[in-house]
Length: 173
Picture 1: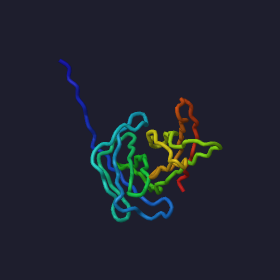
Picture 2: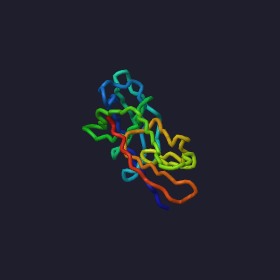
Picture 3: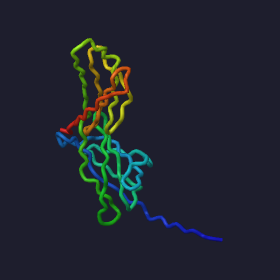
Picture 4: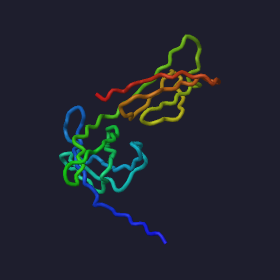
């Protein structure tokens, strides 16, 4: 018979403050969610959601001695993943976590003939992937609530397997 013994250390605590990236004002009620990960790749959410207080400060429990990513979010802001650094004792410091407002992106197709724009499709990939959507009859397509970052808009021509990729960078500020 083999016996396996697992020793669990007392979990670490974490702390930080959530602020608006443009104004540096605290964001009360921001949500903090601990994530599991493997080799720096996000796997899934773990445990309860924690809330920041009126000063945007948060204190969370249940962290490990290894890397601890958290998702920080608030209504009207893009989600941000932050990583904590271990300090003396059993505290992980996340510092100031700035959140940026969500953004929108409009894509406009322009042609020189009698294009039927509603036959064109677009897939937008970046921090989030949006499935194929059709353009309007005016050749416009709008995406709302995007996080800052790099995106690729893949415009697929009607009735063909050809496409055109366009890279778009949504600056945080």
